[in-house]
View 1: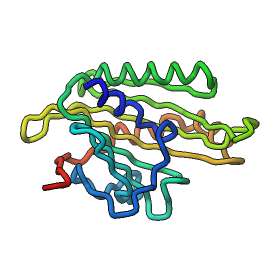
View 2 (view 1 turned 180 degrees about the horizontal axis):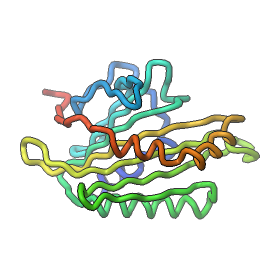
View 3 (view 1 turned 30 degrees about the vertical axis):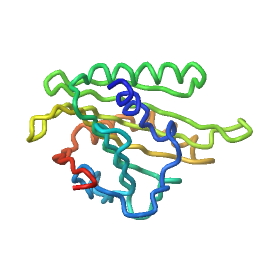
Amino acid sequence: MKKEIIIFLLSSILLTAANGQQLKKPFDYLSVSDLLFNKSAYSLSWTSHPTANFFKQEYLVKADNADRYNTMILIDVLTGTDNIKEIVAQKITELKKLKESNPVIRYETFDNTKSGEYMIDFVLTENSADGKYISIAERNVYRYKFFVDKKGNKSILLFGVSIRSYGNAVGNFLNDLKINKSVLVNEVAGFKIPEIKIIQANQ
């Protein structure tokens, strides 16, 4: 289980290998092919099923691509566990470690005692090749939710929204986050997550 949890934690877009390499139509493991978020339509763009109980899906608007997107939606599902606190705690530990070498990184956590859900709002950056400026700034709002499917399987779902800025626009992007910080958090918190039904590719 530890291996699957580590994979689940390292799902931040800047921390994984480049996406967008999936040339054929992505297989919809979670029975969620389209999403409507903040009045924009997102379609399934990439999926992965690296271990028996871990599923990852990414969604983009029609005009975007995975290599240089403006907004991406992601849904990860880790089955066979209900230890949501451990997963959230390890994600925070990961961010603290990254912050040691990159002070621009920042994060904030939220929890809903009534629903048992947790949220992490965090900012990552990537420097240019010469290290002189920030080439990519990325804000992620992750919402962690425990659920039990119709077969009684315990699972943890991560619903996330990732927004990016590039090059000369990074400065304004980071400044805007200070002014409108709560907007995206509230949108992610209030989003009605679709029902998940896992389908294996060989079915």
